[in-house]
Amino acid sequence: MPGALAVHMAAARLVAVALSAGLLVVIGGGFSVSGAEELTNTSSSSSAPQLLSTVLTTESKDGSARARRPSVQKELDAARAKIRRAARGKGGSTAPEWFHGGDNVDHALLARVYRNPAAFYRSYVEMERRFKVYVYEEGEPPIAHAGPCKNIYTIEGRFIEQLELMPPPPAAATGVVRTWDPARAHAFFLPFSVVEMVEFAYRRPSKDRTAIRSLVADYVRVVASRHPFWNRSAGADHFMLSCHDWGPWASRGHPELYANGIRALCNANTSEGFQPGKDVSIPEINLYDGDTPRQLLEPAPGLSSRPYLAFFAGGRHGHVRDLLLQHWKGRDPDTFPVYEYDLPSTTTTRNSSTTGTHDGADRQRDYFSYMHRARFCLCPSGHEVASPRVVEAIHAGCVPVLVSDGYAPPFADVLRWEGFSVSVPVADIPRLKEILESIPTAEVERLRNGARLVKQHFTLRQPPERLDMFHMILHSVWLRRLNFRLNR
Ligand SMILES: *[C@@H]1O[C@H](CO)[C@@H](O)[C@H](O)[C@H]1NC(C)=O
Ligand SMILES: *[C@@H]1O[C@H](CO)[C@@H](O)[C@H](O)[C@H]1NC(C)=O
Ligand SMILES: *[C@@H]1O[C@H](CO)[C@@H](O)[C@H](O)[C@H]1NC(C)=O
Ligand SMILES: *[C@@H]1O[C@H](CO)[C@@H](O)[C@H](O)[C@H]1NC(C)=O
Image 1: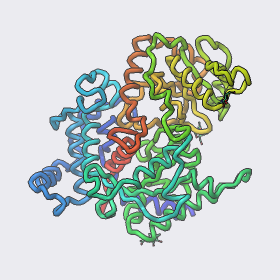
Image 2: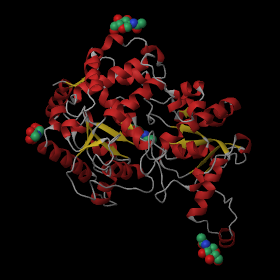
Image 3: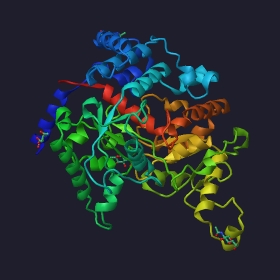
Image 4: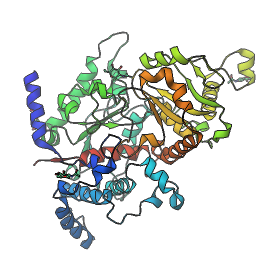
């Protein structure tokens, strides 16, 4: 078996040739924090500019581009070239007014929050113009073409639904990413839901999860046998999406999916095989009853009405939470409230005070009211690395504090997380208060401004809108697809 696996991997390397200066590096300076230096030295990397002029003249002269559509390969080359130019400060982009805040956007803030605003703008616009995704029709609900649209795994069902519900052109002629013509597709989506697979095939208290891997393997085998596209790239231009803790584990059901496929995961744990340059980290968002909680849509209070330094409430899920609660639970409720489920009621509704019960809606209201009164919101990993608190904190105007090891946060290819959040390694949990106290008020305000700027990327809209979470996930897939060239 290891032999067979090795053959698969070798084949994949032949097929998918990583570009010498990958687009991810061009846009973001890779995933290291240093970045800008790399941007100045990418000109030697590709022959794309020549292709660019050919493709562009064809496109601009010919209004009916549909008749002589450039090949998928040439379209990608053209997009790469334009993004590279934009990243070098060429290409005459007028990016700033396009970002949230319009003409009034603060350039210093843009530069703090985006790795390269002009390159991001260009790659996003190129995505809107060109990117086409083919969605396989194989499989039946519940495990394919459906997924949860509520609660903690919301994004799994919503993404499938938003992609599949796109009407065929010409009903919505521009910006339709889904294509029904696989010959036009730059990427192929495997619309299965690991959450639904778990519901369907896993019976507690059994510890046997192998049926879930088999379902994933079968799905890939079916599409690989019925269509030529999987084998053509050994899966490299295919993507899956899962928010379930077991998503990464399930993807191992098919070795090529694991090794080559683009895996869009909430559980983006680099110690569990998540590869930031190949895989996509997606936000975990908890839509308790299918909608963004009303309190999170209200205007977020300013710093002067935030008496708490930091806040956390939640369960003792996993070793990170355990350490956090051990150190901070109940220690300093006046400035650093940390609770294990036992959030004291701040809402004095008749029912909760007379009956002593504290129902779900009340608890949720209290929870968000704490988030509105803290400067920092602690977002420790739980049973897996991601936390829905990150999205909630961003909406509540509370600076998210990522307490995790090996977590690759979402959209880090275009966003500088250090511009709107704080990261603390698990080993520094005992120093949390000290670390947060040492951040000057002016910096907290800058981080909050950064969070306000990126909020749109962490918002799920129905129907999807430009730059929202759905489109940012697609953009992450687009960048990874641009990052290699199929050798055929
Ligand atoms: C720029 O790239 C060339 C070719 O890859 C390399 O030889 C050179 O050392 C690089 N220059 C800098 C400043 O990194
Ligand atoms: C793709 O490869 C698999 C494994 O070698 C094979 O079973 C399948 O028939 C191939 N698919 C097509 C469409 O040829
Ligand atoms: C609160 O109490 C009132 C009056 O007893 C009752 O009608 C109502 O259903 C209660 N609400 C909740 C949420 O329990
Ligand atoms: C990340 O993965 C490693 C390796 O499987 C595991 O030990 C660790 O607990 C994971 N982190 C979290 C927060 O689940």
